[in-house]
Amino acid sequence: SAVISQKPSRDICQRGTSLTIQCQVDSQVTMMFWYRQQPGQSLTLIATANQGSEATYESGFVIDKFPISRPNLTFSTLTVSNMSPEDSSIYLCSVNQATSSYNEQFFGPGTRLTVL
Amino acid sequence: DAKTTQPPSMDCAEGRAANLPCNHSTISGNEYVYWYRQIHSQGPQYIIHGLKNNETNEMASLIITEDRKSSTLILPHATLRDTAVYYCIVRPNFGNEKLTFGTGTRLTIIP
Image 1: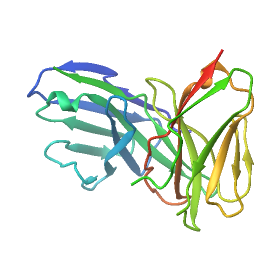
Image 2 (image 1 turned 90 degrees about the vertical axis):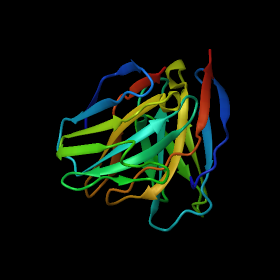
Image 3 (image 1 turned 180 degrees about the vertical axis):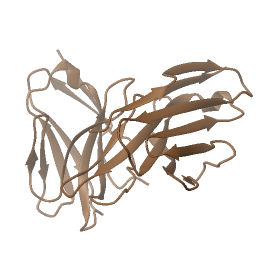
Image 4 (image 1 turned 60 degrees about the horizontal axis):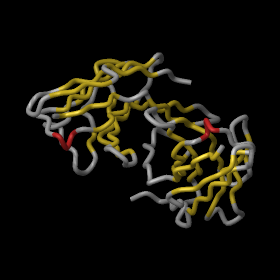
């Protein structure tokens, strides 16, 4: 199974600033996913990131607000830009590992962001 | 939109079997049923998945009805550490299909 780490684990930021979240995987993966979980809510997919190509964003999320980098097969970053209190959420990185017998998605521990 | 329906919350006594239902009446022929859980302040954790046969692993059992329109996740001997939100998700078991989360069931194990 893939082991995923995220940095920072939590942060408190001021309105109008930006935060970059890092996601590191212990194995090479084709696709990485970024999710947001607002307080008391379920997970919502922000975007899917392939190495070497532009990320694909879900409805309601745009690249200017959530730019994503995917420089190699084990690493990705998500930036939350020009933050407002509504961006206070847990941000989760996820990867998919598929073989002939299973197709499983693994999640990182999350980054808890509070915007004041 | 999520393709599954789950009760928002359930309680279960410690040591008893916890049975979590899920409706997925629009499931397609190539879609599997996956279960994940999220313990407070952690990332979701894979539990089990299946297509049409019942499945069992070290964590749980999955019972899928013959018409595949519903399923039940069974935790045979619930412990306090099983308190979590449980998500039932349907998706194809190939490729890199994303997981789409519904609202899940908040399971509380009562001592």
